[in-house]
Image (cartoon, rainbow, N blue to C red; front, top):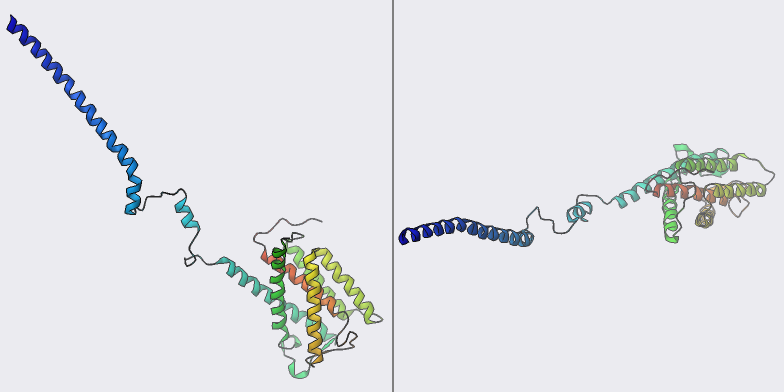
Amino acid sequence: MPRLHDHFWSCSCAHSVRRRGPPRASAAGLAAKVGEMISASVSGPSLLAAHGAPDADPAPGGRSAAMSSPEPGGPYPNTWHHRLVQRSLVLFSVGVVLALVLNLLQIQRNVTLFPEEVIATIFSSAWWVPPCCGTAAAVVGLLYPCIDSHLGEPHKFKREWASVMRCIAVFVGINHASAKLDFANNVQLSLTLAALSLGLWWTFDRSRSGLGLGITIAFLATLITQFLVYNGVYQYTSPDFLYIRSWLPCIFFSGGVTVGNIGRQLAMGVPEKPHSD
């Protein structure tokens, strides 16, 4: 009996030990695996970054920032310089067209006289008039938005192309009136054109920078014209302001305001809502 009893207890203890053994081993293995996973998750990004893995993105938004901000020598062009060149070409073309049309009106009315040897076949104008006026228009058109930006006063009055086209039409009308209207003397014509030019500025500009630049442009253009006429490049009939007509500064003032409005509109990034009076 003692042997049978001891054998029974020894067998039961062995079975219990065998039954409890595997769970302890599996629990220890599971803990080891969890520890390995935790250590791998902690050291994984640093290892991937050290090896230069392509899928690693340690900084949030790094990939999108790299794609949205190309390097200076990258494939994306510098749009600011391209837009500046485009604006210059447009302003130059506008100046050439306005010079040909407006100079034709003056020549037909015998207001402006060129020597026979410098008259070209295109619109009966001197060859140097269109490129000079185009260059001046490009400079003035680029100068207006630059002055606005420097003064910190962006021009917001009537910023739509319909207003710019009306301003061009009024400017052409003022120039046409200088050649077509007949007054008793040039003083009356000059006062009338001066009032029309100020009305053009008030209707389409109303900015201090536009008024100051218009006066400056009129003054400089008048001096240059006096110098050209003095040297016999061309002449005006019936001059009453030294060598030129007294109403010519009014034409230069209104032309500067008109080209300035074109330059401002071209400098705008996006079209704005049309202004309602």
